[in-house]
Length: 311
Image 1 (spheres, rainbow, N blue to C red):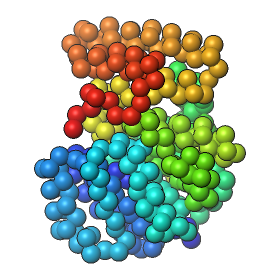
Image 2 (tube, rainbow, N blue to C red):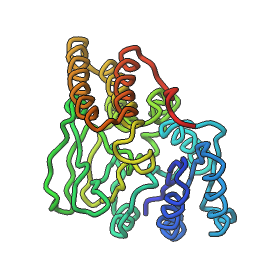
Image 3 (cartoon, one colour):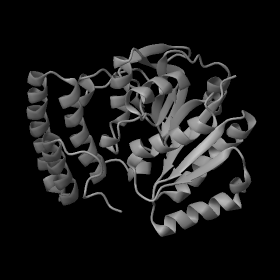
Image 4 (spheres, helix red, strand yellow):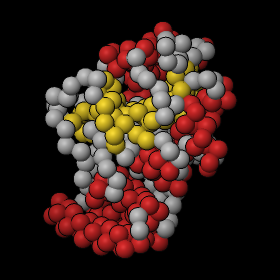
């Protein structure tokens, strides 16, 4: 039986997070797992809703539930790093399952990951469908094609017990063996690269792990349904445009040859210009500005939290 510490981050989505907790806690208790939740410096109203909900469910008295609070917004990367450290200190024999709060996990996935998943020298990811189950959002990717917007194309009717290599596993459901965690943190002190703050940290992790000799794979027995980007503000929000644009440029600089990096910069400028022209007709000024700043900040090498990120 596999033993896990589940890691997730809350920021200003208390109702969503409480539904997630209600979903996973029965399995956490039954399987002798642990759930670590980071409260990532949300606004006072959201903190109040979250804490009242936790108390109402009696989780503040449950030894399997751990609420960790941060006095600053660490982003997803920094938030997971903080609670991963907490979890490893308390339960070093546990493996990690990194999760978003805006997902639904079928019972079959829960059973498989507890009893049948083989934890080897690979990061393991899930097939990610939209919340209706009608659209496959992620089935793997190959770097550098993924930063050019090219993902694997797999049929929705994938067969169980299939596995294939991928450059990274999507961070809404990512399984990390504890000895891979030890190697990564001994190499650079943290699991995720905190300079990215939000978005693309899962891709960077896959690339870094590969440098250390660990690969990534998709397991079709692991399926989740994702309310895409709801935990980060919703699909197409201006923060997603900023961080994805900037962070892909930062990763291109770190992991591509200089000529390919220059080509990617040109590609980014052209494609983002087209997106801006489309958005101009929709008068989405916030998103257009975020794209522009993402390109500029990526080229300048700016990292961490964007000053345009709301508190």
